[in-house]
Length: 301
Image (cartoon, rainbow, N blue to C red; front, side, top):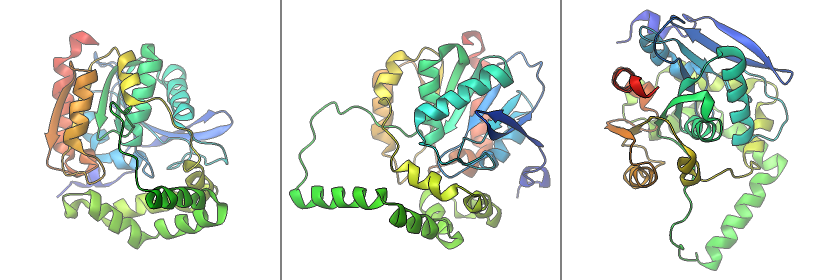
């Protein structure tokens, strides 16, 4: 059972930062005089700073810890813009340089991992280190894949076209954001079902009621593809920790681990008995691994 200080997501007061005339929500905990670089936590698609509550509490005992809501998510504004990895990495880089004021160790889950990797590869002075937790992002095809049957290509084309239309994407958004469907999705991606609390569901549901949330959801289907993971790893030059929830139904963990090691063999990685969000499902294990890795890699920062 978690203690009350961890369960209460308001135990760390939040603040707002104005970026490109948009309000960006963030949290900061821990002492700024730590000899280690600050940690910056970046959430995944549909999540927010709330998803890091147990990590902020645990890690702030050793480090200064920051967490931020990407534009379009959580308590940050949700303008009707075109969203992309490029936009979010510019947001995060500006936050690091203008608010934190020194290079950080970024930790990102899923979409947040891809954003962190993009930033670390393309803005190396902002990244002292990188922690990827079931990170998203495609690799380049190393070998040509068999051409799918015509009927499958037809269905795929129709589906993509359908989701690009305003009314279908709005209806899909309304269906997806229902609390009952949020719970169903979480049951698929969390190995430990007891970690799926009413508060977790509410933390995901609440931002979906904000003005502009439906437009953000629709924009995701129109997001231009960014750089491939292998291209980014070629440009990466900082310590890398990979944490894998090995029961993730959305990612072939073993295959991706092999790919990451192929392009960045000097990484450190651990496999955990968890699903897509091990930082929330097994936070004590994740916090301990992050703490030990930062301590051991201190000379490289």
